[in-house]
Length: 106
Image (cartoon, rainbow, N blue to C red):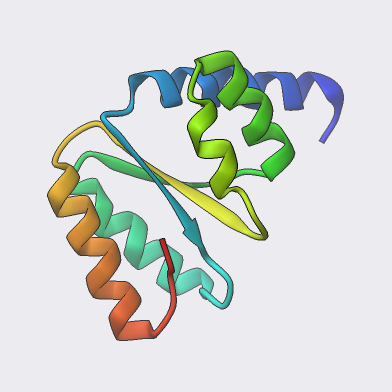
């Protein structure tokens, strides 16, 4: 990823952080590609988006968006769930699938 692409990701993510009603930081270690697809599909019903972004870029986006409080949760491989709809449904989806797979700590 070149510098321009990284800048574009930071810009897009900072906008999503500002617009989110809730943000869940999730340790996604061990999740498979089909599981990630199932999680993304389940989160669509809650108007939520599951994103894996490098922590360094997320730190920059958090500063730009004024959401510095999430910076404490960016330890190890971290994915973000950005919710613009039903926060409870998004949390239930993450919890249900995480329990089923014995993964996804948030």
